[in-house]
Image (tube, helix red, strand yellow):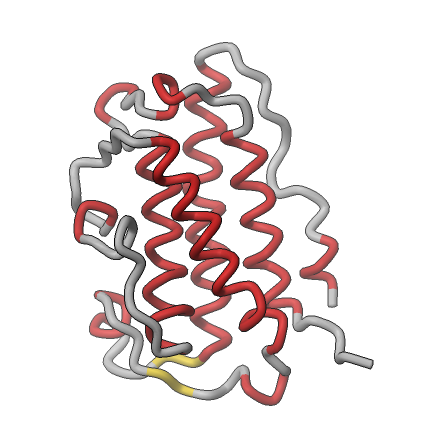
Length: 172
């Protein structure tokens, strides 16, 4: 019997479900909107998935960056625009499919392992970060962008529900 998934990995998987729920039903046109100069929903999905690709797939699994998402246009500080909703959604599915087995295999005894993650947070915190920190940060990052998209959609008259969801897999 496999050990139960650790809550920190469950948080990431729940965030994916909630992100999918907040963008459900968006057309390519709506996904590309940038209300009042904010980031588009399409860019936000690419952005948070770039984070997963960089931290989980590249740093922890040693894989090449995803050709669609592993680029600077999805990093913090870009213009927040994205033009190919279908390509972003396909790339997100691919990145998640690669990361999921790794996330599901993490055991509690590994959470304090330290890694040199590529990016500004590692520099800001002065060095290597724990796996626990990386997982919590990925989940929190997703929920930040989920909240922005939910607010944007609510202002347009879409009813997109309450976030976070039940977070069953994060309950340990």
